[in-house]
Image (cartoon, rainbow, N blue to C red):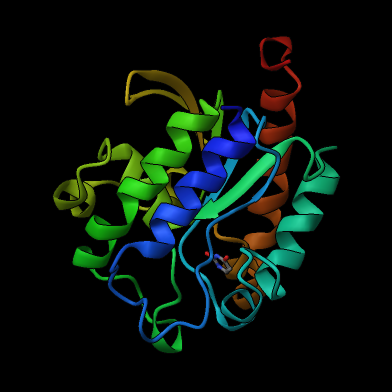
Length: 200
Ligand code: URA
């Protein structure tokens, strides 16, 4: 099976699973982008628009993410975008630990198919998940995004060597304009890291 088929199968399995938040959400929000991507962007959870369309990052935060991609010369043909949670939490509340535990095996499945070289973790939840090496109980002990955004590190995750680039969540830029300068500086870092030839 090729990656497209593997991801489709994984999505079908996820849909059948009795996951927390499934009953309150309208749609599964599994992922979008290229099944051959070596760069993943991983956010927190769907909001209203994503829930309605069944696609990640299609609302206001998605517009900022689209700008980010354009500014570093990437398109949806080169990246894969998904979230920690696969269903929207009611009223966009923060993910609960049990929800993260139940949903992230499906994210790990996506990572195993794609075998990314770079993961841009968007915001605290995705960043702490990787810093805790996928151990949800250890997420609390990890440093916050404010202190480590833009600091690239190599992680070993599920036997893969991955360059982790922690970034502010694109929604945070909407609410806090002061972050814009940091965000733009981080874009330069992303640009440098994704243009290195080992990615191609
Ligand atoms: N915020 C996220 O973290 N993910 C989405 O898909 C949309 C908004």
